[in-house]
Length: 225
Image (cartoon, rainbow, N blue to C red; front, side, top):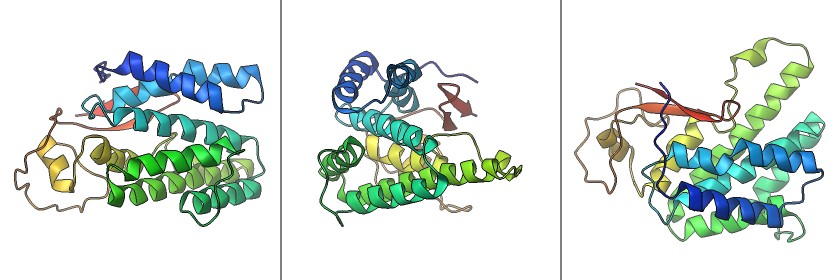
């Protein structure tokens, strides 16, 4: 089932985030820039989180966009170089290294996670960890494909996996616990297989009863009732 509902600020967010990315990101070719614009990554984030808080949806759109561009960088690298690249980004985002302002991939992540921390300090670490893990998974996928293995087919062709989406959903909606997702009828990937019955915690936004994943290749939100 294709869901066309989107965040009401989609047009504004898409314009603002795309302008921000185009002004700061060092695109190597005009073709690479057009691939990014055609993908409408900011719009995808707004489709994925139609009930996000107005003051947080832009952060999801920036994260989607930066991860999309980092993944494109990984595609141009040797697999092992890609692992080193992700190690550096992770260490920089965690504050182990000074943020190099000449590298937009590093400082944009640092600035974004810093802004997120001002809203929810504890949850940002989970978002950061899940995002890097998903990028490593995609890098591993490329390794298996390069070796001619068919195992890579078992990996879902997603830019952002269910773990990232589940954690990010809690952030953009201002939720604190998996029980809050249960109130919405949404299953968190990080929740146990036998979660406790929802205690009916009141939430700020309500969504429909569905779980989803995001497929960037299709450029749409795919929902499973």
